[in-house]
Image (cartoon, rainbow, N blue to C red; front, side, top):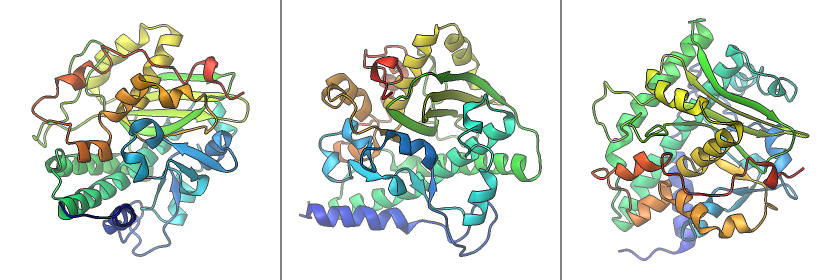
Length: 340
């Protein structure tokens, strides 16, 4: 293996992350526009979990090995950003939901559509990053890329989702969402997240999405999940496109749970299935030292898996047990961990 300094690796990751960015806005199609430094989670939400302007990144919970490659704290300006739409589209498309007053009300379909569009745009940005990182690690270290061959399948799914959502936005094509969960908590949680998440299995371990299926006819279906710590409360929501029938069993199972259990399931989904959540720096330290938390946070993380090579597409049975056999971990959405 080639010996490369940590500084060179960081530079390589930074350069690779920009390599596949588009040259036109993927909403309006304008070529070489002024791209917006868009945030996956609204800035007015992120500011509520800062300490001296800094926010702890999920890498602090994910892997002790990867933390030296990726910053464990960032300012609001660089937290959860993407750069694939122009400034004009950013201002127009998300005007309804990026409002501190509107976000505290139960959402209508237009607001959910805006959130779904932003989540898909963010997922597309991450695919640019993933492709660049895959190429860099392969060329530099000869490191195996367990999930590299699935890139094009994920890419096609995301582009198909965005096209459907854009038609609903621009051409007023009808699209409906099922709001599986919405709650305004009377306290401020220490975590923020806005993400589309592909569930592998439901609460009984039955397959929802076979993420290693190479048949392009079998599209992945995702949930949209939001956790918003606000100035004096928090909003948590989970919703899905009504045309996504794969989620019907999960919806039924989820709705049978009590309120606290629903919050704990959402907490588990975030920590186990995404690395795109942001944490209040002064959260109780036992969270960062909790081995169970680190275990579920690390299994599927991009950087961790690429270097450890611990994801084997031929053995995906452990993915189906994530929600069915939930490890007991702290629920960051409970009042116990409230900031205020």
